[in-house]
Image 1 (cartoon, rainbow, N blue to C red):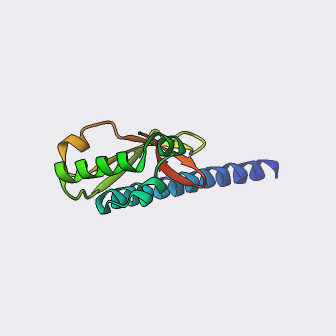
Image 2 (cartoon, rainbow, N blue to C red):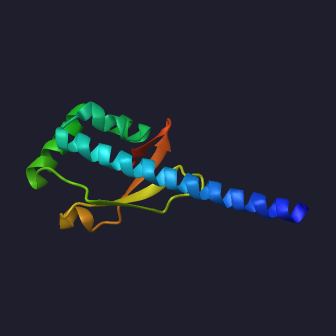
Image 3 (cartoon, rainbow, N blue to C red):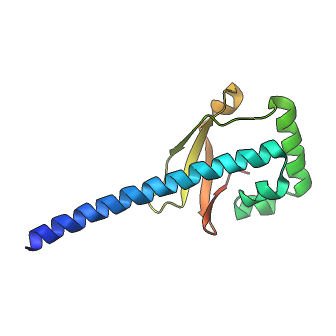
Length: 126
């Protein structure tokens, strides 16, 4: 009897871990899309909502506006066609995100770091 219970608990733990991984990845991908939407719309308050606490403290609204204008000037509107999550830690509190945009300069890097803070995923590369 104890063996069946142990097997059932092992299976349940594995299933729960997969579900947690899937949910964390799905939430992170959605956050990356919302972040890009805020950039495309020039929505500085919306952009701040998707930035880590450290990045919010490091950037003024004027600096973010300059960055958004520069992005629009260089690339126009950016569309994420694919988002990959890598390097997710075991606690689901940080991960790397690589987005595909069709713009070589943006797609060729290793991706950006994101952290899970205050109940949501936030961009952590300032």
